[in-house]
Image 1: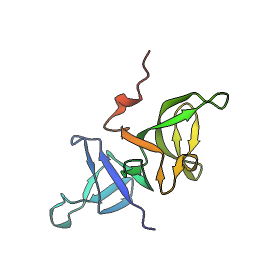
Image 2: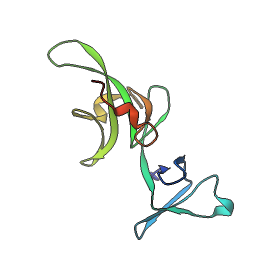
Image 3: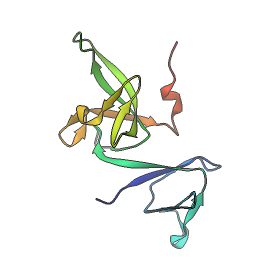
Image 4: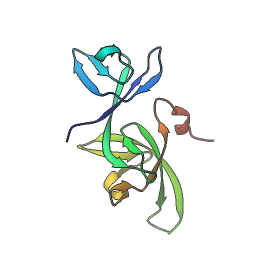
Length: 133
């Protein structure tokens, strides 16, 4: 399987790319996307790569590392169900949904999709992670 990435330019552009090609070297990340002129590489030190998990959310949207997702969770002690929010992260050789605890993505699988809904990502929507007091 060829890895698929999404890239966020956190510099002056503050935009998300869907790169066609990615190259990493000497501390730089180079990408070619649909906006590149004549296949010209875009290089920027502020680019953050997010790898695809290869899975889809409930709505058929591809899930990438760095996505913020909501999922139903319940306490083991009771059947009380609540909506939980977490971040997709690569950790210990696999993708996890992390928040107060780390949840294995496999535990949220429902066939070929995850039983989660993408609500944003950590770069464009950091406010979604703020805790209400």
